[in-house]
Image 1 (tube, rainbow, N blue to C red):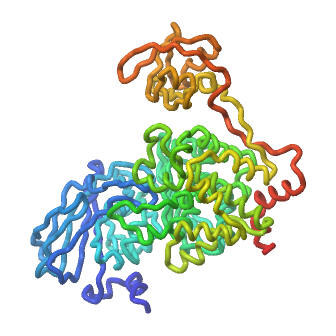
Image 2: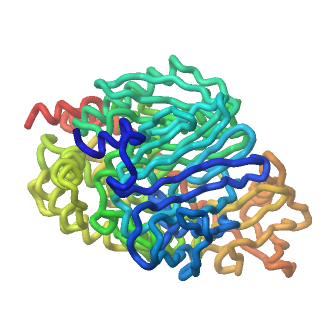
Image 3: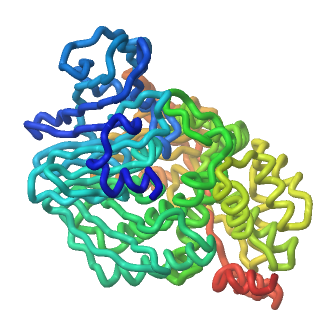
Length: 608
């Protein structure tokens, strides 16, 4: 029997001097303090010093997390409980003197009081842990076996994609630190659970938090899009997969991918199974499941393997996140979970963000991928960058149609992803930017140069190529001026919350821009009318519309300084609303293209 398998089945039967591994012991005393007590043990040492590293970031979010800020106490001991000398050599790395020592036993705690899809959280109701936040490792032994011993209340169940064994304490087993870092878990006595089977693979659903899952509806919808993904990729990275849902009482939307699981945070719980929030649940779940292939197994060469100590720069975010965003929406439509109207609405949201973002003229999606480490998850300075999610999604659609059109509908972006999986991921290697380009060209049997360098690697507008791609499917890109007067005629977008009417975007060279209005300006008065914001918005748009195209006097506050600006509206000149419409006069070829794209992807494969 393979030693690794034996270790997992009966590790207690193996003396510790037969192999090397890293062990973790997790416990807590006062959950309302939100501190988790963690012990980290390294056996069979034979060097004078060892490095103990805590990750600086977590895969799935390409920015530094600096998790060491949550460590309050940190002490190293030898096998006899004698304290060892150490020094902290970076913000998240410790050097411990181990001359003459066979075991180092680190005891530390971690403050866990943030709850989202990638965090770690402890209270009286649950222990929720993303080990990559809070588990340390020795860099030289990162590929060794790991085990985690959990000391929990007796009635707790643990939702996790890792192998488990129940004894005096529940123990989780991992092939190496990479697997441990990629295995979040929720431990609770109130978690709700069911499972389904698709193509002999078990898919588990775990709901933590106040909600009433409709198991029948979930099973029906998830089965459709899961089977669509399995048909597309023809294999799955694991034999069981876990959807871990953190359901909160307030509004939240967040998902993080893992190989054997995903954590999805949604709320409020009372709306979970209806309307737009249920559509969000389906959308983020389909997106995160596709990540089990795309980024968790199909990975850029720069992230193969992950380096948890620093930034892992790559320009392939438009594939990792953009292609996943495209398929996360598209496969819901293709599998019949979303109808045409629902899919068009999600696609229009991507389009709207693109056309409202003037950063598209300043930083390409490839360069924006590289810069996620700089400011990828905040708005940043005005009009600087694009989104690897939204622009990446649109470029994935354009690429998909490019391949279909060039191959006479015999190939598609499906084939590219399947190829990257079989020729790179399953062979244990990462892919490069040129590998992706060559794969597209292989299946299109046509040069991808103009789109690749002209759009993915250039800061340009996508309108012309979007129109061409949509036209191939018998669809039109249609623009309407915004229904809000201040957007279409003044050139500003507003945030209307917490009693404040604040400018969040200014259309370049609009009358508002030329009048000196800036982001974060607060609008206080229009002519003699006080502007108020409440839960339903403000009265600003109605009053600007009322005064129409006559000059309007705005009283605004800029960094606490109040000033007045006289502005002349320019009717129907600025922000527009984007829609997709079917062409009334679509020809038979366009109708056939649309049918192949929207209904049955494996008509394509049978034509090969």
